[in-house]
Length: 338
Image 1 (cartoon, rainbow, N blue to C red):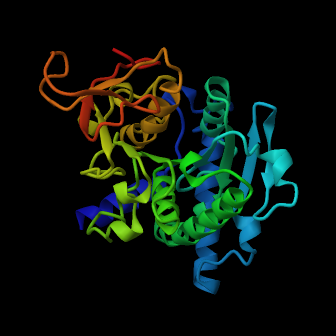
Image 2 (cartoon, one colour):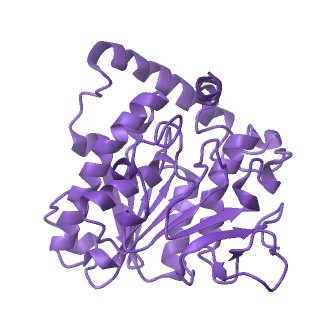
């Protein structure tokens, strides 16, 4: 009953809300009032489709799941199709490739995705493809959960077409938030665990691991890529209680609320609701960690965070990739380093 109540309450808020409470009417945030209303009414409207036709949008997958790709030479991402005849002009086969996959009620237009794309291109000479499954994400949680498996299969097909153009699977990285992390895991599984890396940013727990575990074949785990890192920021709420990547990072022990979300009034809080704020804080920390000047060092000894004991590793892309569970503390204001 508690699980169902939690889903019902959070579903009303959505995986979307607004920035700090005092920024609710600031249009350049990802969580302003207008976006909240768009998500709410979009999900309600699509609820009718569930009743009428089982949740199908009636569109082909190429409409409901799109890929937007570019690199430093072409920083304005352009739509790229499966087996695209002009793929060579959109994705350079001489560079690695990073996919960014959003979660429930999200889409490629969010500022966090634009910021992460820009920072990847700033700090790395790489291709970036954003997976936009927004048409299938703006449903009630259960139907969106069902859609993740369709999205994962289509993502794996796109990756196969990219790989055939000359980019090896080992040079491909998936970065997914929430349901997007689970999509990344299932896509990686479909590709035999041969992808170079997957970064799961607070992987969604409801229906994947709560109230029971659906199994590693249907959710992200360390078998889905050569290296899997998870960052847990809303432990046992939106995020999983126990992560099972190669390296698992627990900022502030993964607990709710994260320090910047405890009093979510200002722009240091991504959302004016502590649980969802903590959930999305994972992608903020990961993005900031793309900058080598922002160092978030985890320690395998949860009681030795400020000491010399325990094994250490950097959270994010500069990790030492030594398997283990890592704990770290973060600050209240950006860039949240201590």
